Image (tube, rainbow, N blue to C red):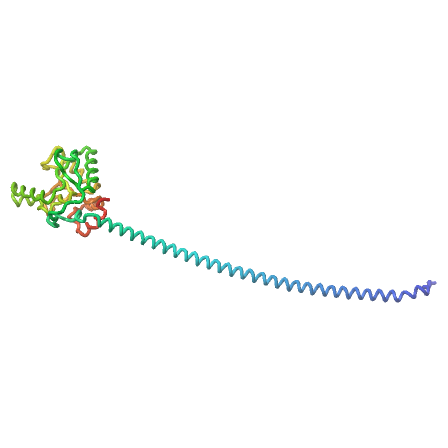
Length: 304
């Protein structure tokens, strides 16, 4: 026989059940609202995250754009700098060229233009022409130790080197004649006419004003064995040495065989500067073979 609940106990069952239902519904509602809130929070978070991501992407895009602009500006600045450097270099080069030209012109203006002129029946030196700087040639280099010969001061170091080098090669070379003034040449030519006749004298001696000796840069050379006679100098080892080496010291043979001015004069050597003498030597040419305009270009470097 089922036991019967007491009246007081049954009295509480329905309220308890109702309370449980209310609590269950409240919990369910709370859970729902909480979930809804979480969902909204999640949606907002996603929205904010998306916004932040887009903002970050835009920032990166802006940074990329700014970086590109900076690179472009840097490139433009580098290009501009290079252009300015090129301009500066070009300007400096022009300044150097102008300075060099001015220096060359100044040097040329101070160099006697007569020194590379063609004489020998071509150009004329008047009776007043005398080189500005002449020095006495030491007696040890002369055939006659008591003689006095002058030579162009600027060309003398080159002649001394030539003579010393020949002596060092055991081929001593001596000087028979050097600078001759207009008057001295006139007297010499008159004596030649008297002794040999005008026709013969004109074959080996220049008229006054046409002699290379008046320039002070020309010498007649011989060896101790031959002396002042000069005959046979072209058969000597000294002459052969001069043909092979004189250009190194700026000297050239003025009157080779078959020239159109005078007879062959193997003893007659003229200083024209190392550059021109070397050019003539390797081109197998002689001084009078070149056009005067070509020769003039070497004047500025005659004493270099």
